[in-house]
Length: 205
Image 1 (spheres, rainbow, N blue to C red):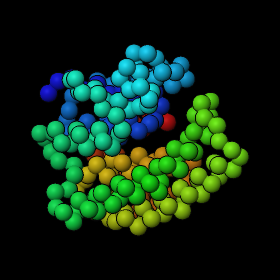
Image 2 (cartoon, helix red, strand yellow; image 1 turned 180 degrees about the vertical axis):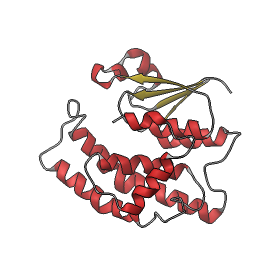
Image 3 (tube, rainbow, N blue to C red; image 1 turned 45 degrees about the vertical axis):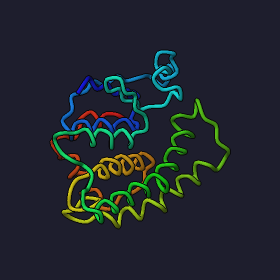
């Protein structure tokens, strides 16, 4: 299969989604963590891999892959151990629906909030942008709470890439002190109890 190398930041980022996917699919990998404060993602060696300087980047043999969800789906496609995407047409629609909702209605506002706060050394936003971004997250993520049901995963009755994606989004929102309903907390704890859940994800904030 060739060596798999994942480039990630030293802090919590979208790379953790890819790391969890690798663990679920039982794919041996090596993680290289870059220091954003030292602009290691702007070093010439890294820019040869990804000229945009963004992470995560996954190198698999001669292939250089970017964009976390695209990487996750690629890994699922080449997996010989299991499949983390629904095969039934209706279930696959639900899977795509929740992913696209998260990508358009939740994640962009969390990313703006991060740019204004912990990444403020690099990005500049006008006054009021943070409160508006968080207002949008609070309003839109409430829809996600209705998708979480006891004994059920987010996109059906089986664990999928959507659960990895939304675990990251929900816990990302908690960094901004959003309250999470009790049934969603139980859902998060059930995901953390999975054998393949990477323990280092808890330590990266």
